[in-house]
Length: 261
Image 1 (cartoon, one colour):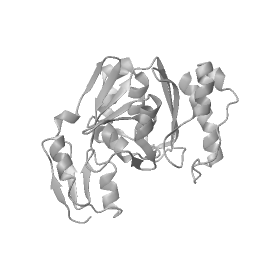
Image 2: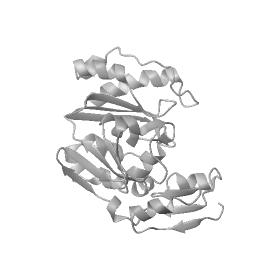
Image 3: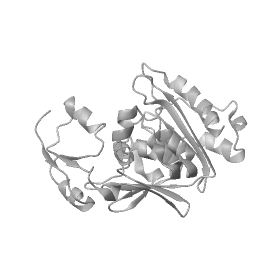
Image 4: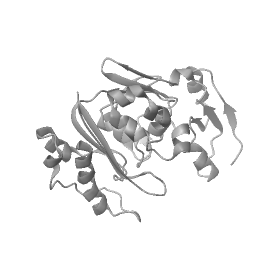
C-alpha cells in the first residue's frame, strides 16, 4: 500500500472536517477499505478512523423504532436482546454476515456506505423502510441506494445511525456464495407501517432493489401460498460463474416465500 495520513477524530464533526482533505476516506471496521487498498485498487491520501466515536455506538428501542448507531458491529446487532425481541429477522441477518472476524469488525454504517451489491444490510434497510441518519439529514431507504457502490451520501456526509420501524412481521432468507458468504440472492420481507416490502440483494446488477410484483401478491395475502407460481423478470439481474440471471430470478420468489414462513 502507498503511504497515507491517518487521523482518529474525537467527534463526528471533526471527522467530517477531516474528510475535506483530497482523496480522504473513512474507515470503521475496515472490511472493504483495507482490502481494496492492499490490492492497489484505491490509494487514499488520508484515512479518517471512526472507531473511537462513542456517539456512533449503541442500540435503542423507543416509539416503535429500533435505532442502531452506525459504528455498531454486526456481532453486537446479532447479540442484542432488544433487536432480537423487536425485529428477530434483523438479528438473524446480522448473525450470518461473513464469518466471526467480519461480524466483530464490520459495522452497519460501513456496510451501508459501501453499498456492496451483494451485502445483507441493504436488504434489511430497504425491506423495513428504514431511515438512514447522517450528520446532516435523514434519508429514507428508498432514496438512499442509488446503484452499485453508490448512495445518496454527499461529500463530508457521515452515517450516524439507522432507524428501523418495528414491523408486524419480517423474515430474511439468504442463499449464500459458499466461499465469500455474500448473498448470491438474499431476500428480506416485511409487513409493517410502510405496508408490505420485499427487498432483494445479490441479484440485481444495480444493487439492492424492491420486488414490487411480489409485494403486490403479499399485500393481498401475506402468506407463502400467495407466491406459488410467482415469477420475477431476469432482465437486469446478475449473471456470472455462480449463477445465471435466470437462476437468480427463479430463486427470488422461492426465498421470499421462505421468508414469509
